[in-house]
Length: 338
Image (tube, rainbow, N blue to C red):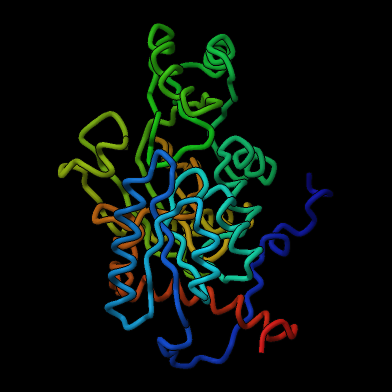
């Protein structure tokens, strides 16, 4: 592997076109489409994220318009003469490279990662293989298409295990399984979304780190009233606690942020995102997954981390949108835009 990926730091280095520090006017963004909703299982969360982002951009004076995804999306983008897009879609067709491919074909700069990185991060199994190959710690796992395969993998890994869909977010379809008798129900729950990951359960603390541009924000520790950070704990419970920055030593915080950025870069991600971890009893951090379009709801984590870095919600939204100006600058440099 060392020969295959020579100079890891160079391989994952961010290549951004930078202009001299200057004040960006709202008119530079042009007409912005905030794309949300869609047809995935995370539609309701996306509607909330999109509404918050749209309201924020309008407050800031950006010419922003909301577009709920349907079969006419391409026509709406063309006829509306949109100059860039803020993608607020979660789940399939939003985080898997589909919408990114459409926008790229239309020549519309957009927030977040590109086609390949989006598809890779959405496929948790392949993302974990990449991280494993680059020596980024991630829990042992296997992919199951059948219950028999899931039982075999769980037996090999050892209980407790985490059962979850390969390509879903927002903790949809996730179950902790402590013993073989509970595996059937958990597998059935996850399998309705496709192939299933059987992953070693890491006992410890939930920690997450957000990235905006090339800035790694303060970490957040998540404390839940239940067994783990499931959908209810994320979006419904008022008992879930968020400690930001996480109660870590300076050395641990630095190591965690560096690991988050390594995982983010390893998958080719850009723009913004969030990396989720577990910290075990020995203090070791394990990467669970990389989210390329995190939630922007009232319960979401990226706005919390931004606030701890003295960045309110409106500034955060603008900072994310500013990353699309890099694509515009690149076009101008190669003569594709005047």
